[in-house]
Length: 168
Image (cartoon, rainbow, N blue to C red; front, side, top):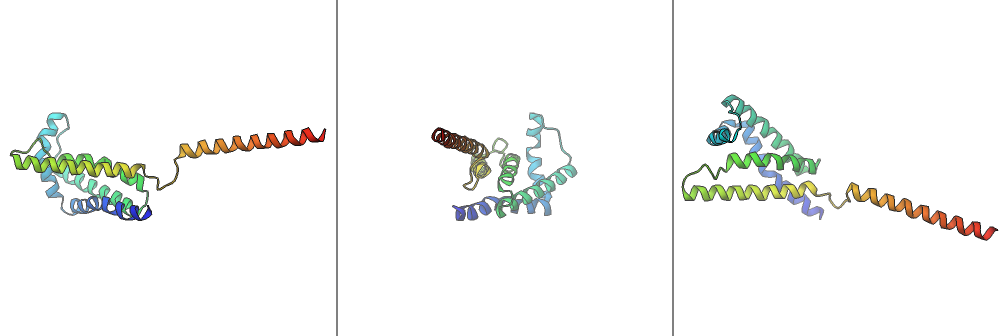
């Protein structure tokens, strides 16, 4: 199972690292994508964003994407990294694949396909969030420790009762 994690985690994180580096180095293209969906987001209630703020936000999101992607790929805090990537996957899906904003059958099919791919990526990230690499959960460990303490106390009581009963 460790071999599977060693292959799956870097593959799951790779697109976020590559997109994040691109967003840091060339935010203009990402701002253009965001500008296409800004009118729709404003109708929903999201406040308007200036281009300079959008470039800064793009770079910041890119840096978070790279850091979390590298964390997941290298196994450093993989559950936290996967949770961060799952959270930023939602706005990335909205900006990169606006199925409701495109015109034409082919463009809409491409956008829907992209949304579904992003959804599958998000599902994989959610699975990585709950992957404990074979270790039991904290709740199970606490319950197991409690059961062990009770079993030890019962065994001590049985031994004590046995010896007290024979010495009299």
